Length: 70
Image (cartoon, rainbow, N blue to C red; front, side, top):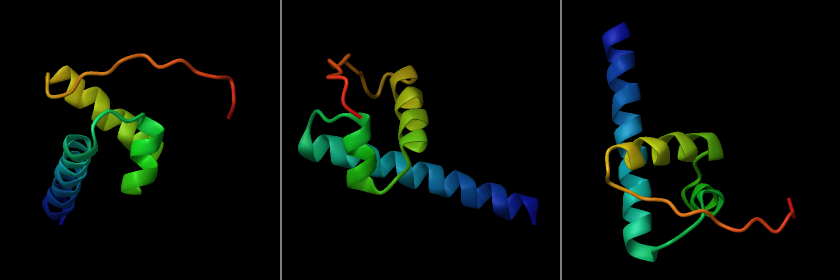
């Protein structure tokens, strides 16, 4: 049963990564918050996946200017 659960988590992670990359390829530069809203993923999930993709060299990030609004 655990291997089935692990396989499901791995499949979901890969599907989420693919969704992020597809969206970025299609629409270009976007903030992580906008990406979370557009894909329906949590901001924590997007942050984790973006960090992994940057580490793998599949994505790069730029700092944005925060205007202080929440």
